[in-house]
Length: 264
Ligand SMILES: [Fe+2]
Ligand SMILES: [Fe+2]
Image (cartoon, rainbow, N blue to C red; front, side, top):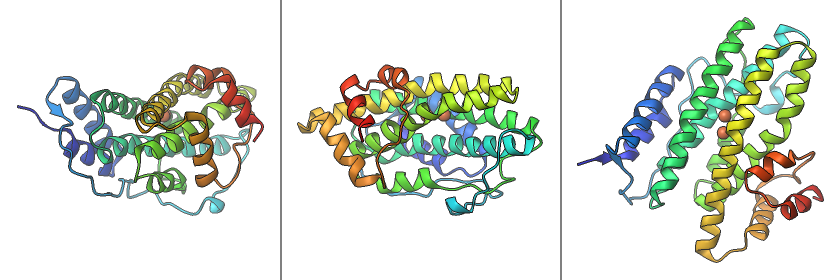
């Protein structure tokens, strides 16, 4: 006898405090791997609000201050933003589990593993933020990632295209430039963390690519054209380069598709 995976996924998604969310993420992942949970419940999921720590205040993106990297305060603001991205990514992974039913068990394997990796990224970056004299919640954040989750909550094909295969893929593109800027100011710990994240995030984009292709094939849709049409529908403008081509190729994009994306 196993219990349904979905109430545990919902609990991890809606937990507000970071340490509680991480604990639920790890216990649920361990129970799933031990075969104690099943994804058999086909009943449609209700939308739920993702947890956010009480001390974290969300504002409109334009209200966020932009600072350089050359002072600890400037780097703290960068790492605060990255810590919030990882917190949001834990929520996005659990939402991908909770919301979309009736997919193969391998889909849930993938997104539960991603939730665990995002929890680790969150902890690593929060530790580094603390060495810079700040903590999660000290600065305002914006909820752009979750807004895309809401816009794509009706269809796993659209979700896979827009979150892992678009927004997380943008994270691959900007990672090397951030590493260079941190190296230039001597933050080698920060560089090392971004290197771990780059490696893991290639895997997350690959999961998005895998399930986007799976759902396109199941519906008889062409991958490249369907993706292009979804970007035009959901993004305000074209994908701005430069693309991290080796990382995107490793994540499953074809060279032809990357050429087309670069041409806008
Ligand atoms: Fe991450
Ligand atoms: Fe990720």
